[in-house]
Amino acid sequence: MKAIMIIYNQAHSSNVLDALDKCSIRGFTKWEDVQGRGSSKGEPHYSSHAWPSKNMVTMAVVEPEVLPALLAELRKHNEEAEKQGLRAFVWEADSVI
Image 1: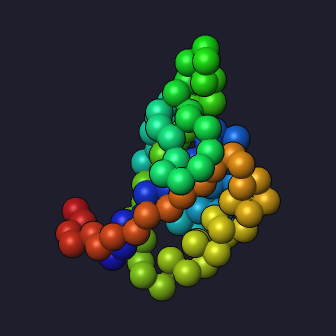
Image 2: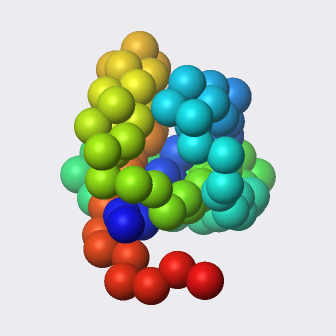
Image 3: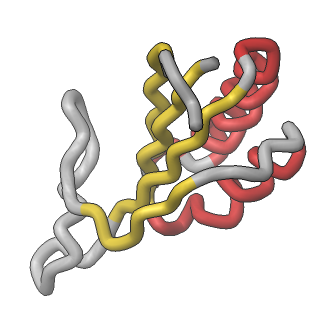
């Protein structure tokens, strides 16, 4: 199994859900009002008066075969609105209950 953490500007919220649906990924956990800034470019997302944008995080544990299609969907949405910000990180999920 693979764990994927998707961190994105709130403007991508419906796009991330659409990508999960398109890849038949039902289970996920979502955090709202997450603060941060990109490592190389982009404005901070601090949900404050000075930096009003905010991020969200969605995490899912998926079968490895599903991952390429999901990453392709996420990449497509990121390229359509690159300044909004969307990143995905993948690692091994050793055990699932």
